[in-house]
Length: 225
Length: 225
DNA sequence: ACGAGTATTGACCGATCGGTACAACCCCCG
DNA sequence: CGGGGGTTGTACCGATCGGTCAATACTCGT
Image (cartoon, rainbow over all chains, first blue to last red; front, top):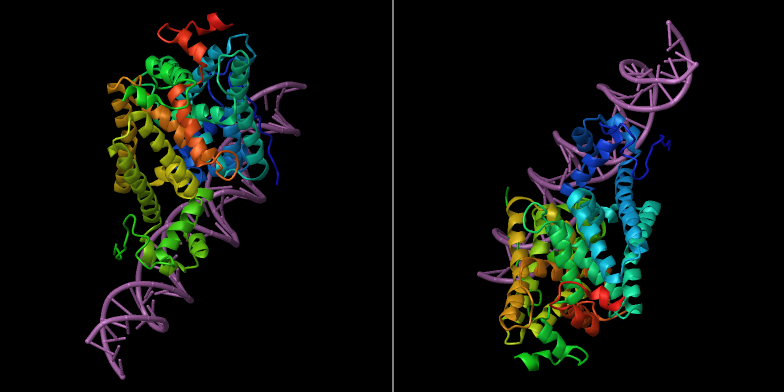
């Protein structure tokens, strides 16, 4: 298979004077929208070309293959999230604040790049072989950031646990926002990040209910009801 | 379009002496597995027939159309979850306990019917028209159960909030388990339901950290670090 | 002006897609 | 025994699928 030279790389979309996005950029963007809307297998390359206003031949010149398009698309997005997340973890903020920032970054991505987020969450499993492995590795690395922050908190005595259940529970609450979060109505990115972080940190119990239950198994109900 | 008589309905899989599953049952089961594995659009009806050991003609006699197969499959699963959830909410248990049971039902479904859960979470958007609307309505009704329980807790002074952010945050943590929960290794259904409920109720902060932060904005870090 | 990449075109490929038509089957009730 | 409903196999349909190719246009620095 001949692979044409593609300039895939993260964060080089603004090369000085770029006022017009490149053809490749446009293809990635439109493909993300279509994949998010109709799924990877539910979207034909013909339709992608149509949306990006490129003929099929030219399309393949840029993307190599349909699966490669999905891969490039997803990889770029996850890598950016990873870079931003790493910066948060590397900062000298206290763990609680790091968690807040991680949530904020997450919500920002959902708000600004809804299509890409949806594709990564929902269509990643359509990748095969090396591409699937590589993307999974990136995702795992991103998830491990949460574990790191959690562990920092445990070491400082602020957080209760840093096992994978905690990590995945938190990630679930955050990831799921791609399904329902609408930044245009209801809470904005900052406010929602604040609320979700608050939920994650404090849980659902009121102060009184929590103080009666904490460190005592589970007799909450007996006290209240 | 002629619609053959299909006996779709919930919870009638054990009709007294049923030791062998019906052809339709087998098709639904195999289709769920394939849809979960390769996605709705990524699975051909030919392959479904192959897996269910039924030729295409016979297959279409039972399912009507491919999309209808996805619909029947999903509907049945969501309806069962709804019935079980309603029973929990209708019980006279206290809110905290209801929440625990809802989580347990959820995890049980993920453990016992992984394929169906995955399909509902990931492929529901492949439905169109009436079928999409009807399934969405069922799902919304199921989600509203959580809101009900949360509100009961707020009324009793046990829970802090019952808005949609709380509901969707909790649902996110629970729903996301379909991605990572493996009942065969690590925690079992009961233990995981316990842990997740605990997370949802208490959050991540330790008792000390929480008591210094609750009702005081967000100066936690200043106290600890 | 020219030649070397870079980018694009449109026709074409075999394979597979979801769906249909219909004859033949099986099996139970009369 | 016979017939009829529920069920199945086979052959077939037009449309679309992802992907390829050689020829052509564009756009530079020299």
